[in-house]
Image (spheres, rainbow, N blue to C red):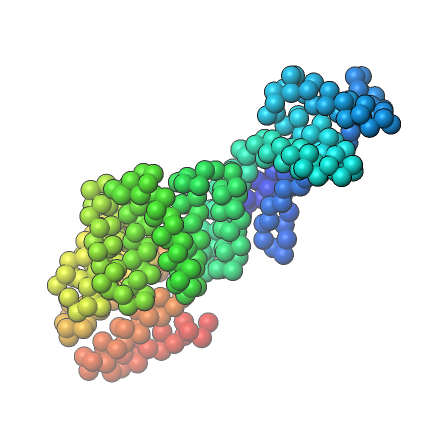
Length: 366
C-alpha cells in the first residue's frame, strides 16, 4: 500500500477516537502534526443522565466533586481514562478558587490518564509517521521528512522510556535527514544518541548498533576524519558479517569501508570491499541503486590506477543498475556518466567521451 495512503488511514482512524482519549490529528501546511487537546469536560453527571446540580456552598461543592471522582475510581480504577472528567472538574473548581497547587495536581493527573489511554494509538501513529518520513528522505524531500520524523520522535519520547529502542530508531532516521542535508553536527549528535540506546539495549553486537555505527562513520568520512571513521566502519562490517550476512545492510557497510580505503589510496583493500558488496547486492537487492554505487566506486578504483579496461565494464554496469533503480536516478547517474566520459577521454576515445558527456549533461538540464 502506498505509504501516504497508509498514513491517511492512520490519521483518519486517530481522528475518530473517543473524545475521552482527546486525540486529534490535523493536516497543517501539507504535513502531519499531532496535538493532544486538554479539553475541559463538562461537570460530573448524576444517575440516569441528568446534569448534576452542584451546591453553591464551596465545601459541599468540593465534596460532591470528590465523590464523583471516588465513584469513577471504584468503578473503573484509579488510573482509568474515565477519571479524567471528574479530575478536570475538580481542577477547574480549585483554579477558580485560587488553589493553584491543588488545581495543578488534578490537571496533571487528568493529563496522565488521558495520555496513558491514548498511548497505543499514538505509538501506532508514530510508526506510520516514521515510514512516511523515511519515504520522503529517499525522495530527497528533506524539509518534509524532518517535520514528520520530529513528530514521530516527539511521540515516542513522550510515551516511552528514555532508553527505548524505538526512540533510537526515530533518532537514527532523523539523523539521516540531517546528514543528507549536510547538517553534519546535528547528524553526529543524534547518531551518537541512537548508538548509546542500541548499545545498552540490543547490545554492541546487534545489527541495529552496527547500522548506526556505520551511519556515524559516514559523518566522520564526510568531515574527512578518516581516523575516526575507519574503526567504526570496520566494526560494523565485522558485526554484520556475523549477524547479517548477505544483507543489504552488510553490503552498504562494505561499500562505505571500500570508499574510505579508496579515499586513502588503499586500492587493494578498496577493491576487496567493493567486490564483496557487489556480490551481495546482486543476490539480494531489488533496488539497483546500491549495486550501482558499488560498481561505480570499483570502477573509480581501477580508473585511478589507469586500469581502464577493468574500469569500463563496471561503469556500464552502474549505468544499467541505475536504470533498474526504484527511484529515478538524477545526480548519481550523472556522476557515473561524468566519470565514464573522463575515462574515455583519458583512453583517447574522444568521440565516445563527448557522446557520454552529452548524455550526462542532459540529465543535469532536466
